[in-house]
Image (cartoon, rainbow, N blue to C red; front, side, top):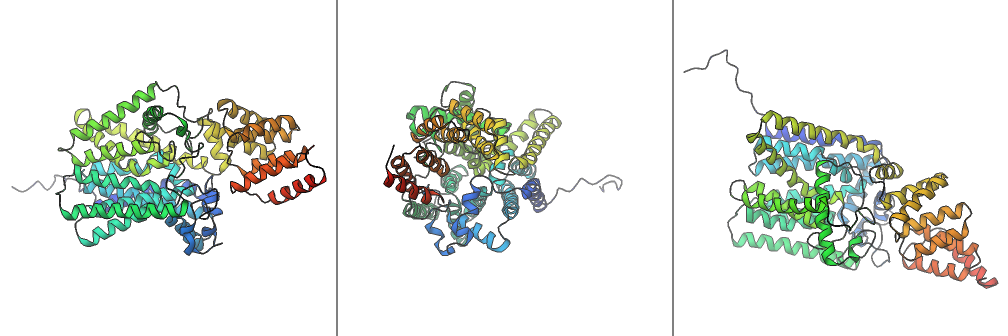
Length: 545
């Protein structure tokens, strides 16, 4: 029987390559609003002033420097060793020039490439075209990724995720070239950023959940991955003097001083916080350091939400292991990511940072897309589609608007204080900008508020001291500098100004002691030599008075 010529033919689904290209274009285009932005926060040290990036030292010495431009064996090395990403920054500068627009454009393109990879991997795992497209679209527009895309230094997260996903894609193949390629891609991911270590348990989980046949070749591949990781770890330890990264820095990880049980409870609470950020990412924070996320009280809604999230992911992973093994894998990797980023399993290098969720959120997006598809079979498909569309459009609008928040340091910290008015980090940073602008009243109010919210935050006391010195309250300035000295302000300008105040008050010996501490911390500033000479001259003339 021939079909009626007047009956319209069913629509032909778009080719997967076309869908992937459209998703990449969506991800890239949505983030091009940052092209007019400058460098922000860590960009200044990692890109603008890094000696390898600027060409002050040869590219061949890239393995001798950490990500912040501190040479091997120099005090002050923070343990962030990302030689491949540093080299990429150097190549970008050499080819296209020092304009930050180049870095922002490349970041947008890289996010588009990662989005296409998320779509391709989800489709290849058997999710179906609609679910894979929804996963790619959600990954493309989600506001959580602005921390990685809009910040220049976030390029490390993008390249690391791209190499890690490429390694996973190659791992699913069984030919010899793919085996070599997977190991090389894993090495490249690790040399781009340390967070690529999450790929190791992801590969193990993949083979367990997807029930790949056990064989000598499979075990050998995992042995190669482990050896690759060990080699990179050894090189990192040689350059940085250790492998623990930022762990000993109270600014990066205030959890380090807490008892182990409180660390784990706070980690579960952070999982609840991550859930709220995934659903409605309205808060803008670069780093969850001192006072940003309280370790007490621990019994609250976020703790309950975090515990339910972890338990729910475990149940989903178990229930779907036979019916939808790829969705089960997504649940497992989401669990692994949350456990690592939120310090649930152990106390890692930083307390919490949005950009560290980037790699794992690829699997979270796929799992969420699957959840929407299952919900559509039980409720009205139109209602579910409308809900997904409204949510994703809201995310896209917030993502596009957030480009203005990342325009420069002051705009970022202004937006940070607006969304988190009790965070000492943002209050102090904004106070420093008000001080530079000469708005001393606003600067003092911001820095004082920061000290009230976290009494042991050294940088806040340094900011307050500088403002008091500017308004002529030298007694108050010295008092605040003394509070600053009880901790580590991690700011050479504050420490130099403390030495300058001591000189003004006729105490050269104390000033020399502060300058010696600056030298040991590798925070020697341009005017430190002049301060040291003046202190020695004053000491020779009569000493402390």
